[in-house]
Image (cartoon, one colour):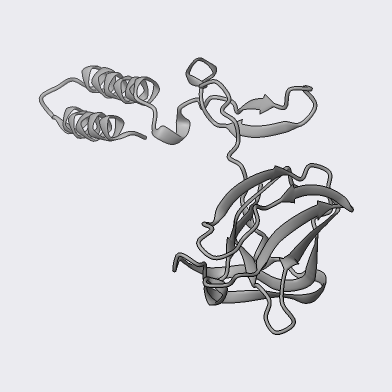
Length: 220
C-alpha cells in the first residue's frame, strides 16, 4: 500500500479496536463500527494504490522507415513520445584498425607536421610507399589532414599523397614542399572494400627524399 493507505489503515484499525472493546457500547453498535472501519480501510487501498499497483503504459516502438525492424523502444505514454531523432554517426579512427599490407609507409606516433602541430597517430611515407586497409564497404566518408613532415620542412623536393578505393582514385593532395601548409580533406568511401594510401615523390634527388603524412584520419 501507499503511505496514505498505511496511515488511514493504522488509524482505522486503532479506532476499530477501541470501538470493539468499549464496554459502554452495545454489542451490535460495536460490530457496526468495526465493519465501518474495515470498509474505510478497503476504500483507502482502492483510492490510494501503491506505485507497484498503478497501471503502467505499454512500450511504444518506433520502427525503421520501411516499417519492418524496431530501432528504438521507449517506455512512455504515446502522447508524450517525441518525434524520432536520428541516431548519431559512429566515428572510427582508421589507425586503430589493422592494415592489410604496406611498403615504405608506416603508422607513426607523435609526429609533427611542418607547422609544428603534433599528431598522435599518423600514416607516414615516402618514395612511392603505400599502405592498404580493409573497410569492407562499411563506411561512407573518410576525413583527415595531409601534410609535409616536420623533418622535411626545409626540403626543395616535392611530394604528394594519393588515396584509392578499390583501385579507383579518390583523392590527390596538393604538392608539398617547403612552406606549403597542411590540407584538410573529406572524401566519399561508400561501398569501398580496400582503401590504399600512396606517398608520391614528384621531385627528389639521389640523396634525399620528402616525407609526407596524414593525420586525424576518421571514418564515418
